[in-house]
Image 1 (tube, rainbow, N blue to C red):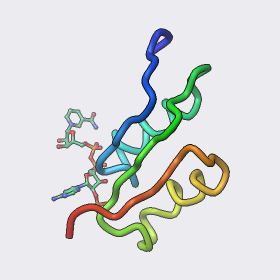
Image 2: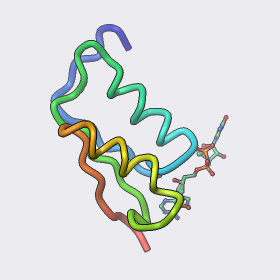
Image 3: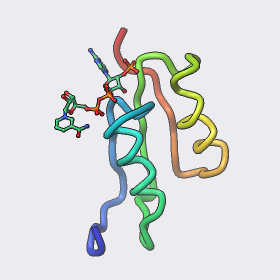
Length: 68
Ligand SMILES: NC(=O)c1ccc[n+]([C@@H]2O[C@H](COP(=O)([O-])OP(=O)(O)OC[C@H]3O[C@@H](n4cnc5c(N)ncnc54)[C@H](OP(=O)(O)O)[C@@H]3O)[C@@H](O)[C@H]2O)c1
């Protein structure tokens, strides 16, 4: 993703697995997106702790609830 250059991305299933891995990878880029919208069905659930903690450290990461 060296030449990846976008203003915003939306990652579904961001609390674990491939989704969480993508969020971390985007944050590590030398030119990270201006906004990373990371969705999870239960942002307040214990399984979303890691992505919530990342959002506290990275102002460009916004965690949103999506789905039921
Ligand atoms: N990991 C691999 O190497 C690999 C390889 C090939 C294909 N895949 C496929 O890629 C997909 C993701 O894999 P993964 O390893 O990241 O799986 P995972 O660790 O089980 O994570 C699944 C993610 O999808 C979310 N999710 C599940 N059902 C949902 C729904 N109905 N609406 C919204 N979000 C939903 C989960 O959210 P909750 O926490 O809220 O349940 C979780 O964030 C799977 O379909 C898997 O079969 C994975």
